[in-house]
Image (tube, rainbow, N blue to C red):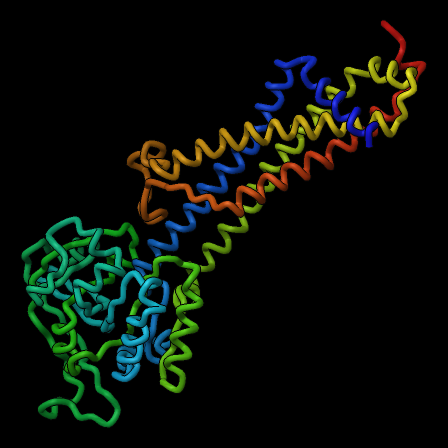
Length: 430
């Protein structure tokens, strides 16, 4: 033990025989760890923003809808009133209230929107404006006019692509036509079996999300207007959308709702199930990120190996003297490994200091991508051009442990080279 401690002491002193070189080397290696931490933070933050924006433009973190609606999208598949009531009771319970940020019932249908200039097929979404603001991104993407108002249950909000196609603006009048919903065992009002219903609406707002599928297809109506148009009773909806405070609670909340609604013909889906395309994109993005992080780790590893190996090769005469004085090959190898671990520790400290400082800046101020792409930035690729970093303690610990273990393993080769120093050649002075 005394011999090992003495070798560690010698290793530490060897580092500071050339302080400038040691600090420059440690800084170079620390930059590798800092780069890894910053990239992990930005990538994780980008994923969180993508999910947050995606669910608020889609079906939320959790959606409750009639069984079969996910596969068919039929507007005749409506939620039973009992399911809506049970869902409301559960979501207002003490256990669920802290987890849920917003709840919004929606009535979904298809229709034809017409103006004096043109017509367009649209997806009608009847909403309660006050509740929809808590779960949807569309109220925040209004570029002209205003969003729907609970005090004025009229008007319609349309996408920018629909407005361009129909050549309408805020205040313009448009006609919405759709097929009333016929529930099994019911007759059409006034014997009008299957006739189209129409209503005159005034555009109150135009939104732009940057997503073609949304801006050219979605319109929002007040829920009572949509129910009247579809000839449905009050409180009859297609789905209930939930947005949670934390995405990781999605499965737990969905499981609790499934237990509560067991025996009812409904399906409770997490966002990964209701929006499989978004989930697939994230899986592909994760795979790409693992490759990129692997490249960064390889670069850091090669830097560590090159640095330690060069320090060993330029000290052959020193190692020859040590062996001549009686230092065994194993002791020489332990001394080199000790130097490597000490240098790695200093590098990790500098890397953490630099990496966490940059990560904190990106977490608070964000990385503004607009100055990179300028007018060429495609809004369909990202929802928010300012990317905020998000780095968990697990990610930090994982990065530090991986780099430290890699440095330890890579130091074995230079240590072996030092241990194999041959005395006659090593003591030659050119």
